[in-house]
Image (cartoon, rainbow, N blue to C red; front, side):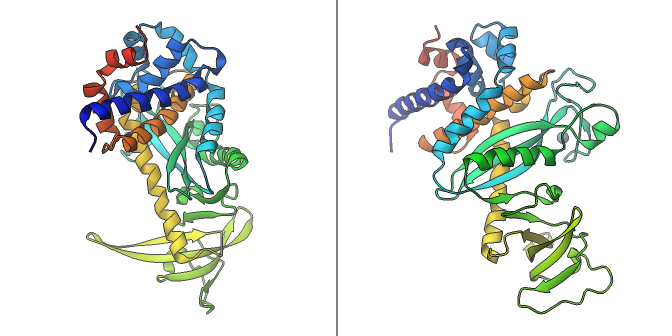
Amino acid sequence: MTNRKGQVELAKEDLIKAVNQVLGIVRRNGRSRKVGLALVLMVLLGGRSSVRNAAETFGLDYANLLEALGELEDAWRDYLEVLSGLVKGEVAVIIDDTVDHKEYSRGKDVSPHGNYWIYCHTHGRFERGVQLLTVAIVDLSTGRTFMVGAFPYAVRKMLDLGMVTEFKTKIDLAREMLDVLKERFRVSRVVFDSWYWSEKLVKENVVSELKSNRRLLRVESAQGTLEEVEGHLRVGDLPPGVYYADLTLGGQAITVKLLVREYKRDSGSHVKYLYTTDLSLSEEEIEEAWRMRWEIEELHRDVKALGLEDSSFWRRERLQGYLTIFTIMTNVVRELVGELNLRSVEAFLRFVERHLGGPPGLMKIFKLR
Ligand SMILES: [Zn+2]
């Protein structure tokens, strides 16, 4: 076991190395080192990572820092380049969404730029917040998971209510992201939940879940016995088993391999309807890919633990810049958590506070005073 002093030295070295790499991306637009550092280190101020707080801590002009956040649109693509260097093998892309609660946002109404008024399904009400599409990749050769990005989107309801004039659905956004990722990674699985059933996304290599009320055009058990499809058979009518099923997707029929599984829980049994468009996948491979989806839940938890929800912005490009910084730093911190044998992102933030001296210590480490 390394002693505390050794661990602190290691943490400093690793942190300097990691931050310098991120700084290289953030400063490509010719931003000052100090502004770049403030943007990056803001994430490590734990639980109070507001931009205003970062400006005060690092003695910078708040307006300047906000402006710098709005000019990071190239940083994300540059970071993809870095990521593609870290990833060794084929990848699974996981697509999901989360509510980025903005409890402290002063915006009472919707902002045309940031959309800070959304319907939250978890809490069943309109709340201050932003809907984010989140994307992660799992390196299938090493099992390492990376956050790829978080992107705000508007929901149809907002368009219907006249809250926004222009929007992309999360499906459109997911499609765009997938295309960008396919240019840089060898994508062999795409995993998302049943909300993304769309001809734009359900293409090759998809492993996902069907809603039980989807209608079946034709179904055949994997053993080759044809099931009787009289009337209107739905996915939820099938007993546990493996099937080849035809369903309507957009204007066409599509064949999927469908895995109906019953899981016993303390609360009773519940049934999952997993499917894949890759008919060669085994049952185990389908279930394994589906389990990867939970990796992104952990990323949601980690990025929020770092303080993602502490800052709000009126301008969308600033929000996007902020999300880019958090995406990159979430990966950096998770890496450091592993190297330092810590248990969680929260434990890392406590480590920074206790053993690296908090914000003044960070300023010293990075020679900011
Ligand atoms: Zn909520």
